[in-house]
Image 1 (cartoon, each protein chain N blue to C red):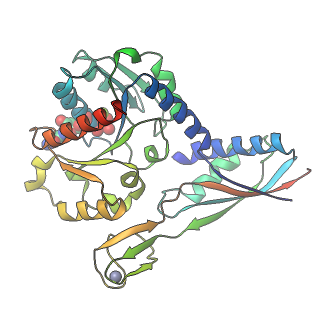
Image 2 (cartoon, each protein chain N blue to C red):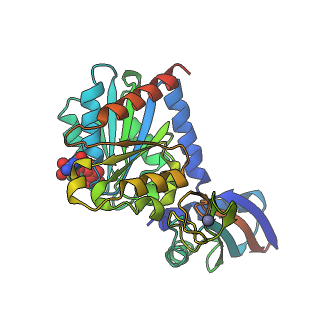
Image 3 (cartoon, rainbow over the protein chains, first blue to last red):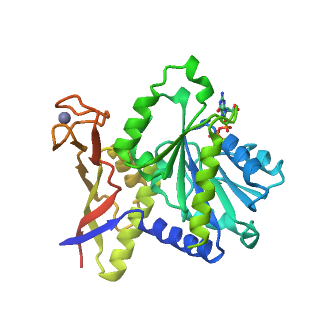
Length: 219
Length: 116
Ligand SMILES: Nc1nc2c(ncn2[C@@H]2O[C@H](COP(=O)(O)OP(=O)(O)OP(=O)(O)O)[C@@H](O)[C@H]2O)c(=O)[nH]1
Ligand SMILES: [Mg+2]
Ligand SMILES: [Zn+2]
């Protein structure tokens, strides 16, 4: 007998993500899910964002990694509450892993929760965690063909940071193509060109994030 | 390696379906997803044959409906279906295109079941 189902395979994860989101809304906190390839600059952006916003917002961080690394220590060194999730080989965070990590954070004392996902251009895009926004970093050394090759990521992200622009003089990176392809995949996506090393362009990102937080928190 | 997570969720859905309208065995599952969703049918099939052991989906055949890449070219003013997404129109070479299909996430469309 044929049974018609038509159900998203990741429905169960979406349900957990929705529960997380309801909790975040209740606690009035804004959650961003930070995604990129390994080494694109996620932790460096987290550090920069903390330094820029720590006076204005109470920040907590969840660090996802395949194995124990020092990312959570880098954040904790700034005096920010940080929880490390080790996925034990898993290539992405899912709603449930984030849910479990929340127990170790004080959400009542948090305005901004930054979740650094596992470095991977494929899997994190599909697994919602209850975030308000997905934030995507593409770094110059990776090449401008990445949006076209991994479109789902760019479709899901609200904002794209093109990082390591300090390296543009040394690397063949077609900035116009990266921008154009990202727009073809996700018309209207917000794009900032930044260097987390020199700080160039970061004020645009910080202003965008602050605006998103404020719209979110005032409803 | 999201294939493993996808397979585990898929098996949960099969069980959930069986608890609603009981059946003994799933013989085949029809899955759909976009060509650009980076799902590898072989990896999926392999993960499935391992994970389904001992469940009512053991031995089930996976069938795939892989949704094509589609783009809309603003210059040609029509939708086209190139084999890959390159950011350009395969007909006119123009770059004013919008990706309109091919990233669909995985859905279980239907199952063939036995022993209802
Ligand atoms: N030149 C340059 N290097 C950068 C920039 N941003 C980050 N880096 C360097 O890139 C390397 C990786 O940065 P991380 O912030 O650790 O990258 P990540 O994405 O967190 O890496 P994983 O967590 O391992 O996936 C480090 O050596 C950083 O110092 C940048 O804007 N310019
Ligand atoms: Mg990191
Ligand atoms: Zn055309």
